[in-house]
Length: 409
Image (cartoon, rainbow, N blue to C red; front, top):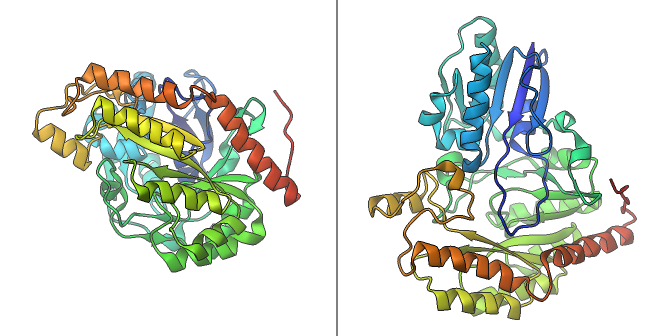
């Protein structure tokens, strides 16, 4: 049977350098498909959808809330042609009830070991409206190598430079951060994959540059240490979310090819200053993830925070606006207080103010969001800072004899 798997386009952050990474959810889901399913993958962010092409079943995989309304439009178009549509992915789980109005089926949860049932039901004309496996997690040992062969690899580069491939070493997260929905999606238990499975998948990726997309690698120190030791022979270069602030862990991470980390920065404390310096001491760059619009943020606070980021030599910065995604503590608090004024999911890009801040007018917070981007990149434009990061990784690759120059498009 022919299964068309679609990843809808979405609006990118206005000030951010625009490039597209190969998506992770669809290739993980595709690895769980029955062997007799012929899958065609379309990432609408890099290529158009042919609505006239033949398909027995259409799957729509959504990761971001900003993809939701476009996903519904795509589904409505195919269903009007008599083609059944099933939704899955993170955003489907966050917006399950609404999405069900545009679907023949919604799949909620993790895919491993569950797709045979779904496709048997479809083939027998018994497709269920909802397949709910939320928090009924498959054995983590069953998570195999993602099916990256469905990707059009030529589409994922930036000015001829190969971007990172996404891979995960664990699921779940023991933390419960204020703006995050992982607690709802993946549970509070840290579920690490077996080392051999992770290394096998990383080794299979024909790209020296990886993004380890785990919510945080700093969840189990012994696990981190062993993972990085296993990764050293691969000579991959990678970025990730936070690493444990420990000398042994940071040293092994550097040996294993840590390129840069995404570090959440909520204040201008000495703790943050030291955190960034510690990464730099081990040759690991830092891209700050800075959330604007928290209840204690004023115009003066945001300006001083940006000055601090420049003072501590942050390598890159990504500014976002606090966004009340469903099934987060942020949503619960702001909804209870009546402070959310937009439920247009197209506005939920993390670059638009959709709620009433406590100490700022919404328009002022939007203005400060643009100020933060412009001020941080005033002396060194974002493209130049990104070039310095790429130069850094290429130098490391040359040292390891793993540098592969790419032809410019």
